[in-house]
Length: 359
Image (tube, rainbow, N blue to C red; front, side, top):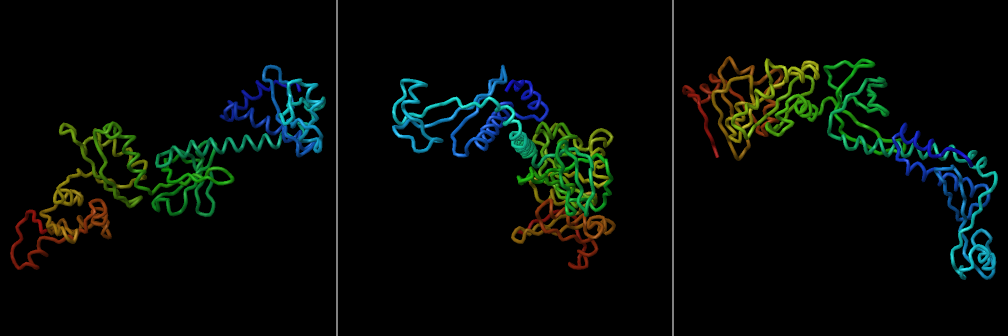
C-alpha cells in the first residue's frame, strides 16, 4: 500500500500531540485486526510498515510440524524448509502473507480502530497533563451553565465547577475569563474529569504565590489560611529573614499586590497577619483589624479569652461572628472575646490590660 505513512504520522502526531511511535503501533495493530477479520480470527499475525516507502507487510507465525492439524497455527516442516532450510520441528516460522489488495481491505477496517486509538492516547495525555496541575490554578473561559454546574473551557477539555465550589457572592457569565483551582482529576471512560473550585483556600494561597515574588522564592512563608469564600480570608505569613517584612511584601507598594488578589476574588476582604509561635501574640494579631488589650490562655482546654476595649468588641467579633470564627480557624484555638467592661463586671475589679497564661 503506497501511502506516505511517515508524513501522515508526523502530521497527526503534531496536531494531536501524540507520540509518533504510539501512533505507528496503533496503526499496525489496527491493520493486523483487519487482516484477521478478513482471513481468519485464529491467525497469529503482525503488520510491519516501512515508513520510507509506505509499504505494508503482513507476517503470519506458525509452528513447524510433521503433520499439520490446524492450518492457521501450523506449517509442515517441508514447507518451512522452502522458506529456510534451518527450520526444525517446533520452530516458529515467519511467513509473508501480504495479500495484493490488502491496502483496500485495511483502509475499510482500520479507520474506526485508529480513531479510537487516537482518542485513547489523547485522553491519557490530557489526564497526565492535568493530574500534574492538581492543587494548582489554571485560567479558563466560562463555556456553559447547565443546572447550576459551570463548565469551564481549559483548552481541549472542560472543567466542572460544582455548586458547592462556587462563591455565593459571584455571578458567572458566558465567555468570562476565570482563575480556578483544580481540586481533583478523575479518570473516566470518557476521558479525564477536571473538578474545579473558587472557594478552596488553596486558590488564595496560589494567588499570593503568583503575585508575591518573596513567597514564590520561599523568603516569605504562608503558615495558614482561613477562608469564608467571597466574604473574608485571613492569611498568616512569616519570614526567617528579619530584613523582610512579610506583611509589607504581601501588601505590595501602595497595596497593589493584595489588590490584584482582591480583584480576582471579586472584592473578598483579606486580612494579612504576621504569624508568631507565641500563642498570645498570634491570637491577638489574628483578630485584626480589632485591637486587643490582652489574651488569657488556657492550655488544657485549647481556649483563649481575649479582652478588647468596649468600642472594639463588635469589630473583634465581626458581622455574624465572622472575624472571631476565622481567627479561631486560623490559630487552632477556641477564642472567647470579652470587652473590658464585661471583664470588670465579671471580676468586680478594674481590668488591667496585659497577657496571662493559665497552664
